[in-house]
Image 1 (cartoon, rainbow, N blue to C red):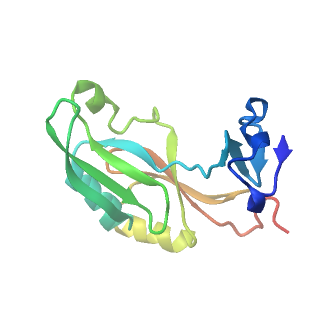
Image 2 (cartoon, one colour):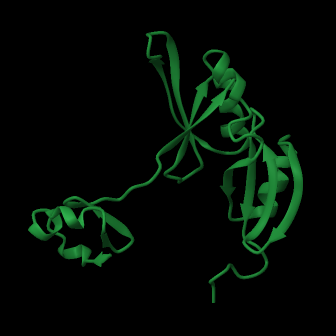
Amino acid sequence: MLQINCSTLDPLRSDLRAAPLRGRVRCGRRRVLGRYALSVHIDLTTLVVNDYDSAIEFFVDTLGFDLAEDEPSLTNDGRPKRWVVVRPPGAPTGLLLARADGENQAAVVGQQTANRVGFFLRVDDFEVTYERMKTSGVQFVKDPRTEPYGRVAVFLDIAGNRWDLLGPGSTPEIGAR
């Protein structure tokens, strides 16, 4: 893997355009693809729900997420739907709340990760957040416990999907000094 100085990255440099280097050049922690150093992250993941408004209420009012978008839209075949995105405050990654459309989609509501924990909500103050969520009626299916990576408790979202609520532990994180 070739390491390069990001501050001198020139997208026209012939050595970065060379096919043998494509995808095998790193600029710090970023991989250089073709001629440009790209910053890549997951923007959205879809969560299939039964109803837009109850899902918005859960994520915004109960969990404290921001309602980033709620716009009218159309399905691929022209039927009305909504484009609804919620995000934890300050987070770059969000959830696209998609109302189930048809039997196949309705069948995965609450089972998107086959009853495994598939979503992870990290918070700075685990105990305060846990108590606030319990008071708000969030259903926890596993009591809080301490793991090497911090505090964790499993809860269900509005659709029945399992989430980990994660917070710092009382012991230093792995690799911390």
